[in-house]
Image 1: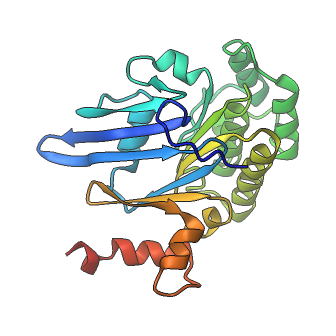
Image 2 (image 1 turned 120 degrees about the horizontal axis):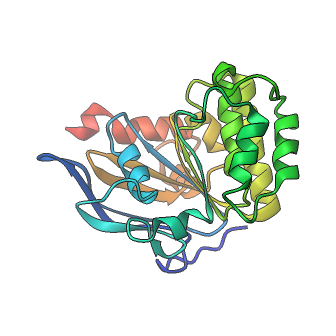
Image 3 (image 1 turned 90 degrees about the vertical axis):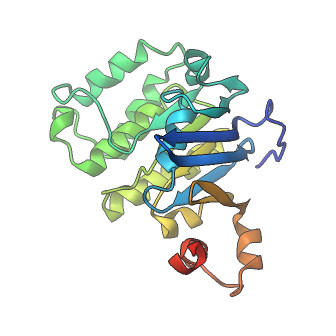
Length: 251
């Protein structure tokens, strides 16, 4: 499934020597990573480690102090509109007009993308059991998250960026979200980058993992290779993450 090319112009997602500062404090310091085509990259880190800053830069929402981020080989700060045409996004906090129903929101989105697949979006709503007559603002957190995923996939993006998409979701909604990602990977080979605190859930779908600590990317490796090299060969991803980001390790 994975295309392991790592040239920046070929990798659908590339971060090159990215530095972001807020005042004198570095949120990211020289971070470089690449996500191979058709793979799932899980970006991990404790709160404040720089995950959200990296995602904002990747989506062209924030200008880095130095370095750059690329989607489909395009610099997202300079060529954001072109890069986002082939990219789907599920934000940490699902956002849509609270008074609009889901079909109306989907119809609005359809006008923005020439590749919009209305039947596939409607089928996802049906499979997720999303109410059609209730305004978006009255949906549950899990329903809003699943609506965001259905909309993000509506234009058949080559890249999907998910910013902690399972935060606040119940077990059923998390299961549905992960199953949809796996299904989309199998059908179209979408390239996925997600930040998450749900280490147990993402372990089953991630090909590669990056761990941020102290503004730097201290781990960037395939999940299975990382587990094989860990002190306990059967260690779960959560155990590896805790070992890498422990206060003692920081010191």
